Figure 1 (tube, rainbow, N blue to C red):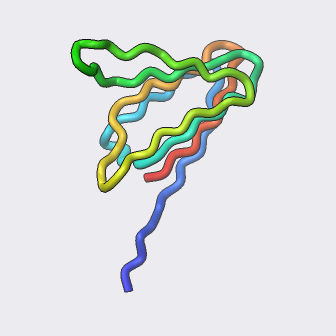
Figure 2 (figure 1 turned 180 degrees about the horizontal axis):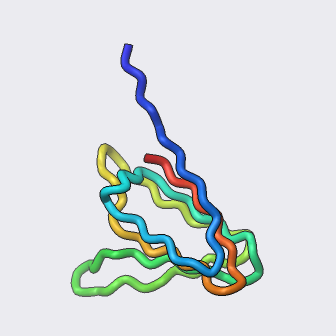
Length: 92
């Protein structure tokens, strides 16, 4: 019998930037803001000539990205400015 292993990554960032890449083999990621100061996430893809713009994550809110099928996530830039704490959980 074959066992599929799901690796779990956890991190908490403050006053920092975390950038995902395809080489990380991330299949799902969730980011939660536990501070009053908001953080942001910026995707790395242009769609039809439209550049990505940052999404704000405010206190007690989260955002989750999940891949369908066998793919992995591309570039995401997760930013926790001064005074912001973001908790990250990723599955690969």
